[in-house]
Image 1 (cartoon, helix red, strand yellow):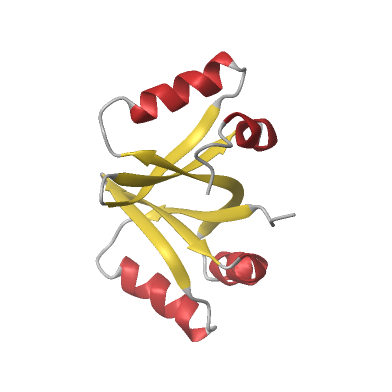
Image 2 (image 1 turned 90 degrees about the vertical axis):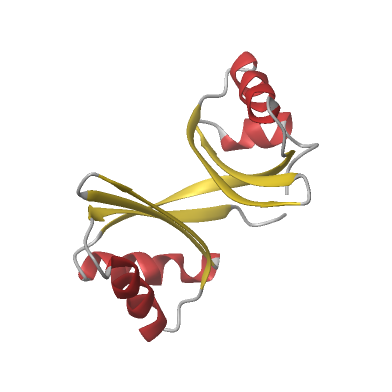
Length: 135
C-alpha cells in the first residue's frame, strides 16, 4: 500500500529573508523541499512544504527548535482539469458524501491539468470518492 503523503505547514511572522532562512535551515540538514507554496497576509506568513515522508519528523523538529510554529498533516493529491468548475465539482462530490475539506492548495498547472493538495476530515473516504483523479 502506498504511504500517505504529508505536508508541513509553517505559520509565522512575515519578514524580509524568511524564505531564505527556512530554505537554508532545511538545506543545512540536507532536507530537500519537493514543493513549496507561501503566502503573506498582513504581517503573517503561511508556508506549505512538501518533503519526503522520511524527513517529516526531522523537519518538524528542526523547525520547532528554530522557533517556527510548524505542523504536519496527511494530505491527498489529485489532478483536475484546469478549467472553471473542476474544483467546485470535486468539492461538491466530497460534501455530498459527508467529507469536509479542511485545506486546499493548488500545487502546479501544466497543459490543462492542475495538481491540487487536499486535507480533509476523512482522507480515507476522500481517496475512495476521488479514486479517478487521485495521484
